[in-house]
Picture 1 (tube, rainbow, N blue to C red):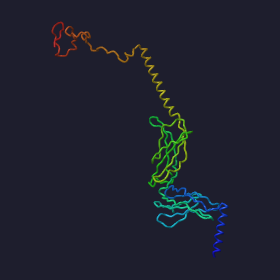
Picture 2 (picture 1 turned 135 degrees about the vertical axis):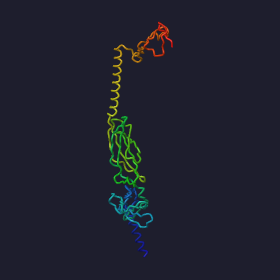
Picture 3 (picture 1 turned 60 degrees about the vertical axis):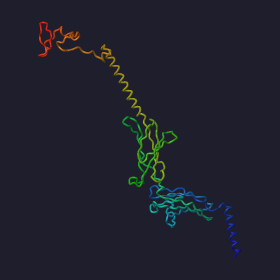
Picture 4 (picture 1 turned 90 degrees about the vertical axis):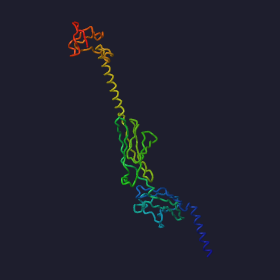
Length: 314
């Protein structure tokens, strides 16, 4: 009996030595790369396989839910591509912890990844925003700005409050190396000022739910800022200045032709009294007793005739 056991062990050791010499070994340890849900309704997990040990290697993903001792295998290995497992709505539960492990097996043995604990609520990475629109606009004071507008991801239900989505935009001019980022909060539009006329700008958007990760940057859109916005304003002011100067020159020339001085135009002479019968000499001397006053100016009961000289007595 002992001889048989010794023979079996020797055969196994010989087989292992031959396999090692041929570069064959058990598979390397796989690693779960990422788990992602686009909408809290489905999710996918991807893994990086380890070395195959020089032999055909099979991979499987197994999982269990917190509080459940039953172990399940991946329901769909095809939908999300190689080395992945897709969980449809039927297999997705929120507020539940998934314990996920990837196993690798070949003729020489097996290995398993470290377990990954997943809560679908916190692995949401939505699709990028859509319908990115760019438009150059002007304020009432003729100041130019870039109006940027977009829509939430198509699969994300934001209106019902199932998602609270935040957004970020980035832009750069043609030829620039670095992007200029702007966080917009929950707004789906944004204004950018201080742009250079004649420059072409590129814009992208991305979004993030209240729990989860930023989406990838969406499709790039571009627009060229017209240069005639500033030229129009400058032209208007030049025309106004020229017309004002012409009006001033015409006014000065007209005044000079009529022989009036500027002081005469600004401070005209005070006209003399126009009352009929009023003696200006009387006003200058201030001696009313020596001169006659036109009787037509006298009020009844106020003046009396004293003598032939027409003296006044009040």
